[in-house]
Length: 335
Ligand SMILES: [Zn+2]
Ligand SMILES: [Zn+2]
Image 1 (tube, rainbow, N blue to C red):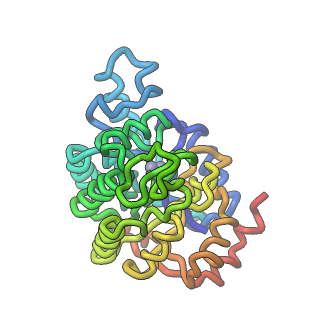
Image 2: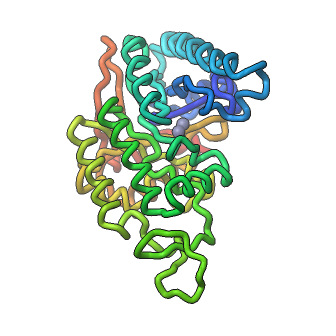
Image 3: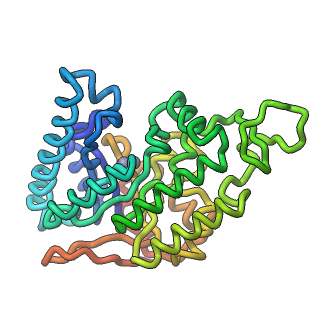
């Protein structure tokens, strides 16, 4: 079993449990590969979250704390990796990119270069649209949508354009929660099916509930943008994570949803890896049974990929038949 994306309460403010306790749980569940991928530090105070400023004197101190936590994370993760090197669970060290804006994407590049002996790969993630977080709370999500002229089509395009810049500059081996923007879409939101504008008029036949619209297929330009990104990921050998944290947050499908997964099969050779994006012990391997059903019955995969690290520190991409994956001892260890 594998997960290519995780956090802990030790090194990120919104994490819950200690890294050591999370590591013990992954060993107990008999993960074969578990990737430790703390967020890279953000360098502009406008991207600080409230929980990062509550215990510090000022923004400078908050930003320094992010730097300090990241250095500590890298040391701790290296120690965990070393200590478990002869155990059945292998730990690979990565980092989750904070593609907040161009400045952060460029900064990510310097971090990956500086720590290239320690950080073996990146989870390429976008958490912002027009510098506003889209997975933090409803208020910010609404603000992000309004920054895209209150138009869902523009909002999707803004997200995927920033993702494309991040992909081009960093070529992350794993692309994180591909459709994160869906997390906080209000279920009662109505939009104009042609323009993508938020709709208020109930009598207009062009206005539909957003849940009844296949967002990624509805506008040719949006679909073409997604396909362009997927083809680019395919060109450098990147992988798309199936991230089960969406299921833990009660969405009906993991990231990415089945519409995008179909496009990944067509344009990115179905190169999926699996991630739990755990922030707590209880999140480790969360909803993996549902993810297996999703991979088998909904998106009809024959194989799933994972990363392995060779004894000389090289990362290789390995594919495994889903039939073999589904026979892993891990499944017997789940509660
Ligand atoms: Zn993320
Ligand atoms: Zn994450």
